[in-house]
Length: 240
Image (tube, rainbow, N blue to C red):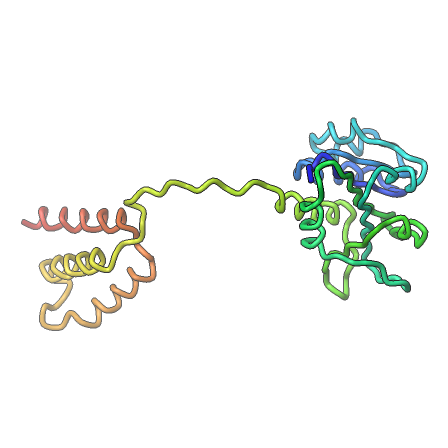
């Protein structure tokens, strides 16, 4: 499924700032199709200010009189809701939704439908949707900001489809130090500490154990071992 085939549908939105913030959230996640159903506010300066540069999403927006028209071309229409309905509807978690969308053929169209700020979607509007998605939240405070809810779903979809990071080339010097490298360093360190009088050659045990624990906790790389041994060699040369 291509991201360009996904549309965010906002129904009856009452504040232009929420539309602008939604455009920003969408643009962050490479989703650019915004459909407004019966918007209850002007799309002007406030919306564009809150979009923070995601002007292209607002410029290309579609406006519809009702939800049925807005989702007519979609094979998957997903309602978002923070509350359970008396009639159970097929329900997905955000990650499950992202996986479902990712598996769909490229030619299909998807609509994610978001309701009004204060009342959400009506039961009649829910019935135009194939499935429902609920974002897990604090049971005692489940109301999400509209743009935040859009951001969560867009992120899940984007991260599901984002190309895997290319494997990084690791410098051999940055590989974890081997046991033999560490033991060579500890022997070198003890020699220098004894030579400078920091350690008693007769009783080096406890301090060396603590130093060993300190360095092992750091998970040193071979490059770091070489730097530390170079410092010890410099001390030895200076002392000599």
